[in-house]
Image 1 (cartoon, rainbow, N blue to C red):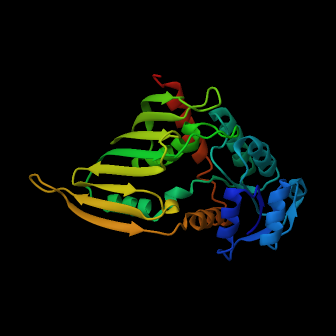
Image 2 (spheres, one colour):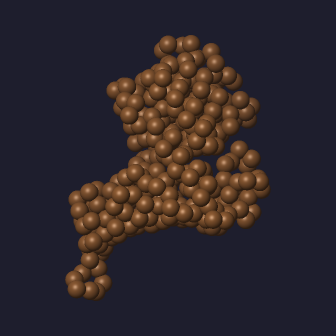
Image 3 (tube, rainbow, N blue to C red):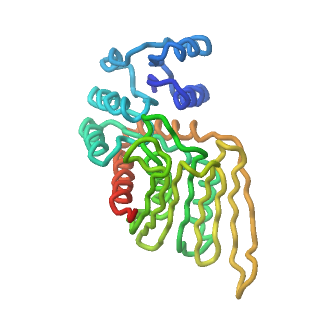
Length: 314
């Protein structure tokens, strides 16, 4: 699969390095406008670096555009790429509201190309282990989920979209992964220090699925990066702490003791962040199989986020 990468900042560099480990994906060129970053790219890599992507829209040898720019400039690039029949891997969130996400998703489905929004942490080994333990019924019938994903400091970059769409969207994806189809019940979203009006920096939401209830917390004013996901069931619970991008990640299985008492514990520890490669493998498989089944994934998450925003009691 031949790709170009548009936007070579922090995320773009992670994409480049991940692709270097995947023989089935070839980078044709890089697109970057910033002069200093272009100089860095020319010094570090052997790829050609261009200012503009539009000449590649008509290049039939290009299978996919990997778009790593912020939300605002990304939308027009994504639209151009999809209309040109290119498969797209881009960053979250896909727009700032459900109508924007719907419009982009409709183009992808009409053109019958793959649209995938980056959500690499679901490939974290500890989360995959938790999912496997639950599927193996090690905690019995799942009852409820609690998920916290918070960032160390409030963001000031005006391209940012607030805590709900920057951090909370991850919680939504994970809630869907562990709970199935979910519906928000109530929420409380605040803006304490965020410099952009109408953008939140902290929030909580209660959600439910057919058989489970859950709570999620997302924040940019935690002052310390933190992640914790807990699923409790009839026979125990599983708890995932931290992410491999920050260092060691642990998944702990707690097995219920009858009639009462401290549960038996089994801990699994993971280190090394290979989520970027796993996500690209997923994208490659979808493109080669022309698998469009998850094209609506970002739209479904955005619709849930919009509901959380609309029902906020604060």
